[in-house]
Length: 374
Ligand SMILES: Nc1ncnc2c1ncn2[C@@H]1O[C@H](COP(=O)(O)OP(=O)(O)OP(=O)(O)O)[C@@H](O)[C@H]1O
Ligand SMILES: [Mg+2]
Image (cartoon, rainbow, N blue to C red; front, top):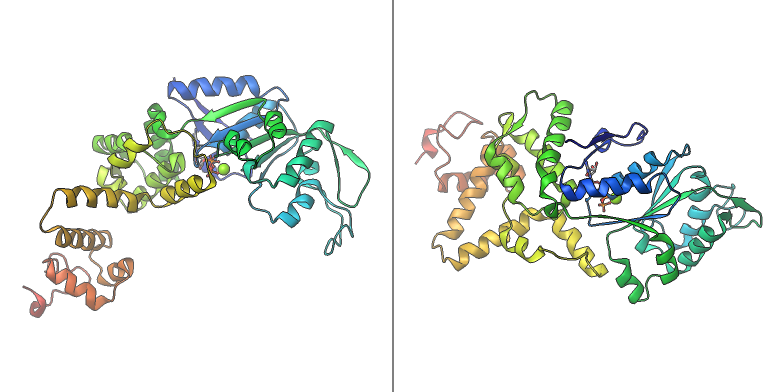
């Protein structure tokens, strides 16, 4: 059974964010929970690593709530501490220097709808007190005003850190934690819901090939295997990017494992098995860095393996593979290849020669120069 839901009111979203693919048994169970929670007024806490689909899920909850007001998403980590008060709760004119006009805050703007507070763990402690008060009193008072404004706002908060650790460390108020975690929805990392990987890949394949005007895009069996074997530190967003990029660079519409450029990170993969959510800001930052640089990490693992195996010509092989791959990617164009690798064209030509890549067959960018051959 396919669980592809369309979110018709996701107006501000890019087209890629409008459908939910939930096929793994764990995801199907989560979706059932979403459908139970959505029509209630309960505050929801969405927990999940980066790129697991927290915002998409929050939109789904809003859509299932029947609320007619807007869905507004606010990133608590994106504001300066000085402004976040006014941003959330609004202000009257003259409330502070620079406040020339009165403005509604996010809570007021979301009235009748849903306010999504992303990265709630980043909310400064002083603001946490105010947020708690707003949730308890169901009204907001703009800065510089005394008049309370009644609120009918459904709050959904999201976090990619374990807030219980933040509570234990004194960074997050326990009373606010209990208040916002009335209903929790936990998105497991992608590698823990393998049944979602191929449906998601096909979903992104269809989506992006339509956008790119590619017809008949498909996944070769080795591509499917590579996708299933990867451990996806950047989760669904990483999968989406991998498929999108492969469609751009692949020479044919049937994508192979090589086109997808995912190398199994076996060592790192083993170490992340069953890992709980990152507990500290440092761990979270490290995670984000890994998600941003999976390729470098994968390379490191390969290098480590080869070094342990004491491969004698390792340096030469690595250099050759890098130069050859870039040269092929750029269709044999030396100028483009040099730019890709951040080298001067002379250095590139030296490397191409060294690895026997500068012959008539490879040097597509210009007529073969007999003097340089051999
Ligand atoms: N179940 C799903 N089906 C289809 N697409 C999904 C699904 N989950 C996530 N995506 C897509 O993956 C990308 C990341 O999702 P989203 O932005 O909701 O993740 P997130 O958990 O909020 O990430 P971050 O922690 O980095 O903010 C988006 O492009 C989203 O459309
Ligand atoms: Mg998000």
